[in-house]
Amino acid sequence: MALDVREIARRAAARVLAERMTRPTAVPAGRAAPLEVPRASETSAPTKPPALALRAAPQDDSRKLVLGTCLADTPDGGVLRVPMGAIVTPLAAEEAHRRHIRIERGERDSARRIAVGCDHGGFTLKQEVLGWLRALGHQPVDFGTRDENPVDYPDFARAVAEAVASGQCELGIVIDGAGIGSAIAANKVPRVRAATCCDVAMAKNAREHNYANVLSLGAKTIQRSVAEEIVRTFLSTAHGEARHGKRVAKITEIERRYMKGPGSGVCV
Image (cartoon, rainbow, N blue to C red):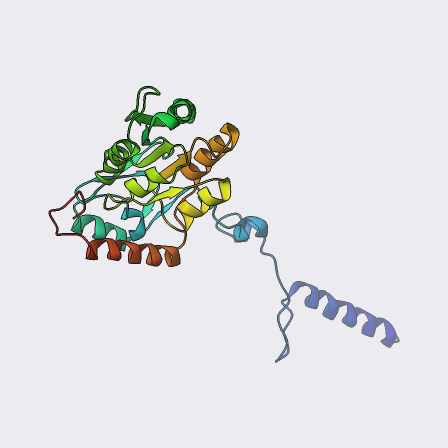
């Protein structure tokens, strides 16, 4: 019987093609191997989708950083209250240990004890300030005066300033007719930085740039609505960057240089 060469060649080509379809393909040198997705039976665990593998872990932006400068307003042996989840830096912890400051964590960082004082010219505004503070969730401590009978503003400014400097209260607010005299008197108490603020911008700057811990208001120079916004801004603004803290530290150094000694006043 005659051989059909063409049929034999066709069948041979079909066998070679079938073998190539069932065997791994050799990869020539210098070329990348084709991407192969393993079958489910060939893997020990399901493969995660690429989107899940590339997803970053969520970050907690509510945590606050407690720096060494945050201890500036806390007297030696006092208490610094920080919110839950706050991160205390090693330098801040070391400074707290050196000055015997206890760091306490609480559920709320907005509630504060705030010293409030005024003379007769600031009595009406002081009563409103006390209400604003309570509405904001703070605990105001009223140092007087109790009515509109004439009194001397330095007495009440000093009482508020000493409450802040000793750690009895975290911040202070003093009020008189112009807001200048009470600020001058309060600033005579070591560790107090009182700022007279006539608008929101000044209140923000006083806290952010100057680390002010006592706000001074002039009852006869600002409207009630403006005064309320100033109080809110002063309480809600945090200390600024470290570059501001370095300048505030120079103010503290001037203060210490002119003190009579470590036993004078409430500043060590």
